[in-house]
Length: 92
Image (cartoon, rainbow, N blue to C red; front, side, top):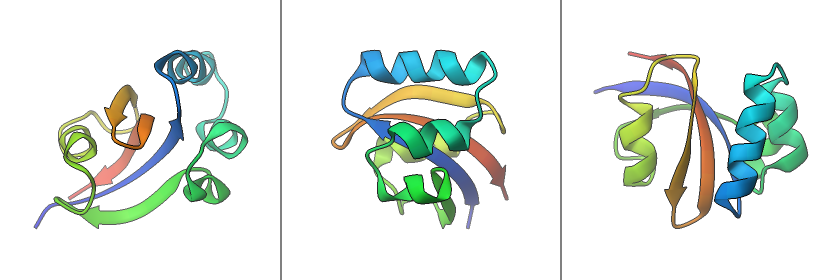
């Protein structure tokens, strides 16, 4: 079974998500941005979600995590929870 490790941040609007993505792409640390702005409890770990298998996350999230380039910020990804930025840190 495929496994992936990823980190993310979750915000309410696409505009906020895009603004945070621009900050990260300009050199800000993903974990620091997640800690400061994410609505998810994972923000306490810099957005780190640990390792999980396909089907353990919502479909929109899974689709990106199991197909995206490693170590590149993806998003905004819209789910029922809001807008995410994702970074896949490993996959096997």
